[in-house]
Image 1 (cartoon, rainbow, N blue to C red):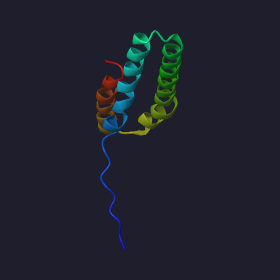
Image 2: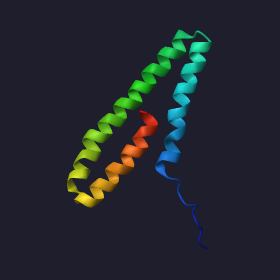
Image 3: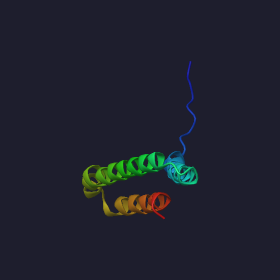
Image 4: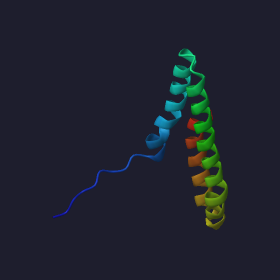
Length: 88
C-alpha cells in the first residue's frame, strides 16, 4: 500500500505566521498595559532573531561558499524575499 504525502508549502508560507504573531502579541500587551507580556515578547523576539542570525552566519555561510554562482544567486534572491517578511 502506497501513501501519498501532500506537497509541502513554501517555507515563507510556513513561517509567515511567526512574523504576524509577534506584532499581534505586542499590540495586545500594549493595549492591556501588561509590561510583563511586553518584556516577554521582546526577549522571545530577540532570541529568535539571534537564532536566525547565527544560522545564517554559521550554517548558511559555509553552504553558500560551496555552491556555484548561479545557484548561490538564486538562493540569495529567495532569502531576500523571505527576509522581507521578517524585517520589512
